[in-house]
Amino acid sequence: MNVIWRTLLVILRARRQVRRGHRMPLHGVGRIRLTTLPTDIDVLQHMNNGRYLSLFDLGRWDLLTRTGLLGVMKERGWYAVVSSETVTFRRSLELWQRFDVESRLIGHDDRAVFMEHRAVIDGEVYARAIVRARMLRRSGGMVPHDEVFAAVGTPSGLPDIDEWIHEWAAASALPSTKKPAPSDWH
Image (cartoon, rainbow, N blue to C red; front, side, top):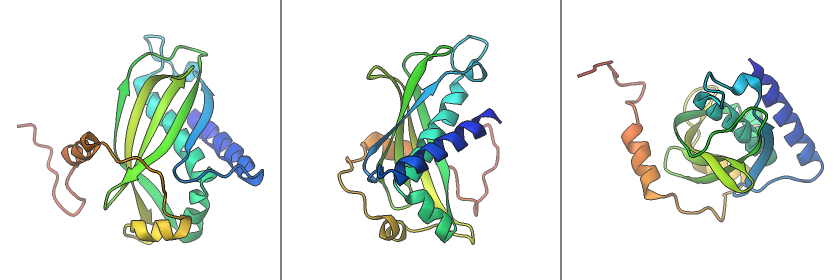
């Protein structure tokens, strides 16, 4: 529940930045400053591995708001869902440690967009997540990229997506919701 307050704070700050003329291009890198709180810590006294993904969500909210995509999504009845994500840890974040969450759109394929999130201290990456997300309509169905980019502009200056990311996305995919996905441990 405590991440909801952080989310609201991030969105409010991002909206204020947009009102002040600090809108971000789709290819930009968003940065928010966070502190590791007692509710983020596990029994080993460092940030819980599951909390990283929750805090990287904050970077996504900032990115959506500051690029103007969140406003377009609300107007058109769209929402984004994460279809897969992977996180890699390099160093631990400790209690009360201040760090930046850096977030960037890194590209797209025919069905999803890819984002990268990093936990960074003094220019050093402590953890990195790759997220694959799809845009859906509240009325049902997926929103095609050409419709999204027509609404917010086509991102330019994006790097090519590393081949391993495409391979990971394919290898980690589950069957569509229209096909069976039995829990078979054999």
